[in-house]
Image (cartoon, rainbow, N blue to C red):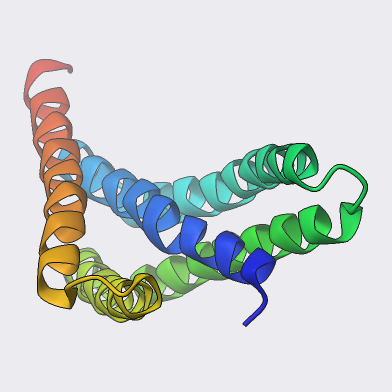
Amino acid sequence: MDPAILKGIYFVLTGGIMTQTGLILGMYASLENNVKKAIIAAVLSTAIADSLGDGIGIFYGEKTKYNNNNNNAFISAISLISAKVILGLMYSIIIYFNNIRNGVIISMIVSLFLLLISLNYLAILRKENKKEFIIKNLTIILITSIVSYIIGLLINNLID
């Protein structure tokens, strides 16, 4: 696969999943009423705003590497934006068609599955020990998710 496309996809599969799962868990823990609408709105808003911001960032970051080759920068930016919007839509659909608790649980399971597949493939590409690579990276992602959930609980309990 084209390295410019892989760069955009992997940026999303780690950063995008961390952002969306943290957002979902934090909001789920902090909101009591209309949580489904709030999470869907937040996920879609974040998917669009975050993907465009990251897309521009990766575009200019790639431009610094490939001085006269705007094509690689454009391909990386487009793959990142597309993948993040698709990810946001996926989470929104999961939450919309399930009760909120099941939607959050299914979203976390799907996230874990996507991360396992992508981290396994990346370990193969980098010729690293798969088990160590996956455990190290999943630990960071899981800590981020737990912290987001705890912050949501604290906000729910401390703010009226």
